[in-house]
Length: 236
Image (cartoon, rainbow, N blue to C red):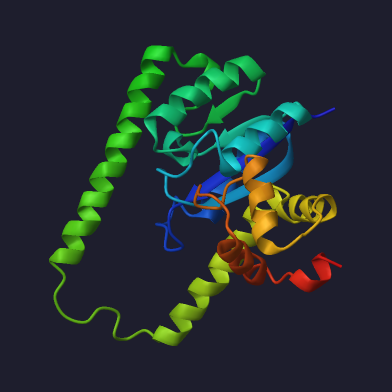
């Protein structure tokens, strides 16, 4: 029986550079699985900043739980695809050891268990520092920008592509954390299953929004609409 593998791919924005796009990261994971004769059990696609990709919340947490329950390994293209938060990366190494979930970092050609605590600490610090530098570069580029940009592109087409990409990633995120099932569980458990109470239920279960925040009636309603679910049918 082949060892199961979960591919974790993360981008910060829909306009990710070639080589670090979701497609590229997934292809790298697929090639790794083929070379190691492992079976890809799931592909987790995340669109979130490295800062909000925390171990105690969201898709990174759910991925580790699934990997442990399935007896699977996890593969990522680079360390910073896991997170750009230093504390979360340090916690992740400890969680990997304690849970037995092996994490493969393709850019290094090594497993997390083969990386010493001191080296991993340096990598975590560098990942967070790089995030700060990226933020500063973006601010500086925006501040110094002069004249129209992309005038040969159709803004309506670009806007629609961006919306479609966000919806695609939102659906992948919702599926990875079983959001629909959790909402239905809340509806079945609550005496008054309105949006506000369901949001409270999700918060009580330790679930967070895609950006790592708390649920409320408003953002829950927006998420349900974005995913194309029918709230009235869900509460019947």
